[in-house]
Image 1 (tube, rainbow, N blue to C red):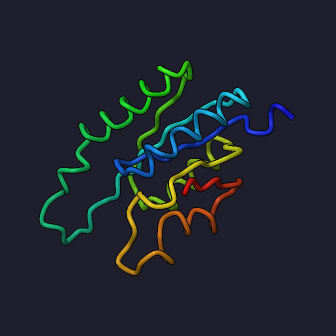
Image 2 (tube, rainbow, N blue to C red):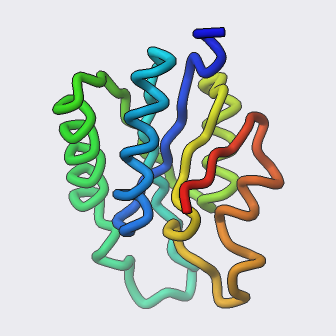
Length: 138
């Protein structure tokens, strides 16, 4: 039973929900001695966007991943980091498939709600598309 969650994928962004979910990630990874993969998805700006959003500059993403990695290493957890570009929900599910994730853990919001509202959130899409179980941290 101990190898039930061999690989855990934790998509991160700058939201409070990501920070809150980190505690759950720590518990799961320690309990199951899982491999932890941190993922940051940078959404491609639409072609008609005046300029790329400085909030998601490569430096910001690198720093976000670095901070998350050091947070977990402070808990004695080694993690790998991945940075991808694309639509968050699809990218998260593609990466889960690619790394053979057994579990995706994510905050209930964060990763951007679209204008259409909660029904069309990244979280909802990931739940519908995921190749593995998804643990949503409220």
